[in-house]
Length: 65
Figure 1 (tube, helix red, strand yellow):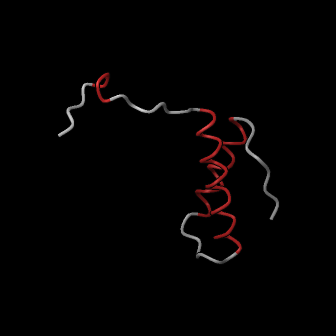
Figure 2 (tube, rainbow, N blue to C red):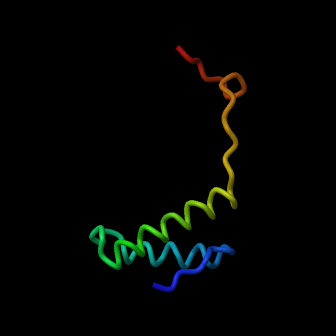
């Protein structure tokens, strides 16, 4: 299993395409393990690339009951 870190948007797109082909793979199989690792890498890349700041309920206008 040759998996590299996701360092660019192109790497991200390639990983997403591969995830699509692996989706539904059985857990514990080579394909399932690859899917798990790729999803983890994509999640980490997206968190760094497009961080989401915590919401402030006062600024967002939400009413908490």
